Length: 204
Image 1 (cartoon, rainbow, N blue to C red):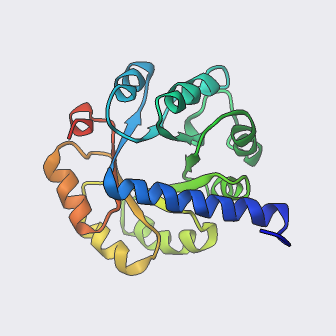
Image 2 (cartoon, one colour):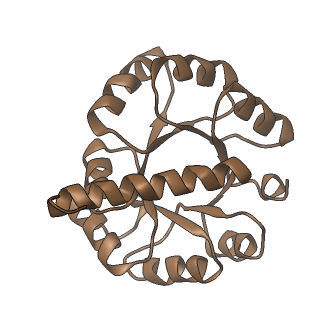
């Protein structure tokens, strides 16, 4: 990386880390989404390798990430859901400097770009509630350039198939993935992984 600026090196590191995460998801395509300490405790004792942390605050996020990393997990923090933080780019920088998080989740393009500059893997979340939100997605992806996207709800295999034709970014199906049939349908439609808070899904 000789001759690169600091930002260019961080983006290159983010891309390399993203490649490693995607490779791991090929072997273990079920991501555990955790919303509280009880769920975190259960997933740390499971075989799931990647964890989406959907809770926490300025007071405890360092400890939450440390617990997951000590258990050998790859950890993503949803920066939009952290209590006590404003949804600003400095929060992403703080996470990169003060926690061992591997990446972040966010619906916001500026935070996705900030994550990549900080050397973190960036997953952009999209809530597809209507055709307008669907048709906006490719433009937003082109501008933000996330390492992967998560679409919610994830139980829409037909939509996943359409997206595979419209974008070249890996797709994670999240939300309302409740059983094996949902997992198989999403992966069969082209998703690289599914993210679920359903503990039965974690055990698959």
